[in-house]
Length: 137
Image (cartoon, rainbow, N blue to C red; front, side, top):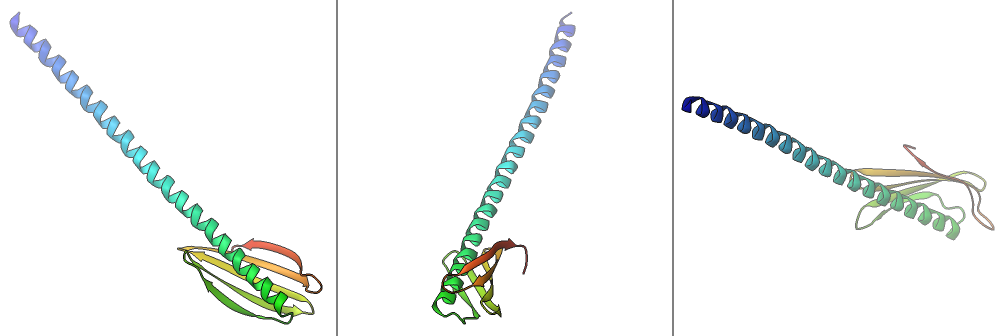
């Protein structure tokens, strides 16, 4: 009788130990999943922030190109502007008459955003026909 009680206790002990190990393994898996999800979310947020900054720099260079055209109607050429968080560059092409094309790009880290602007009138006011973000020029 005493041996049977001890045997039952051992069986319950093994079952309890096995249950604790399974619950522990599941808890570790859930914890690792949550940590990896948090890291992925941080990377996505960082990439999104860089994308917004690159777009802002591309717009800044586009505005700079428009100012150059305003200052000198026959202006064509390119320039690069360096900022603390990245850089941008633009190129102004004369398409004949008052038509101009501005290609502007902003770069922050590994993220690059490109903008293409078409102008069909310079005087008395600059008339922008299109302002588009492109994957490539």
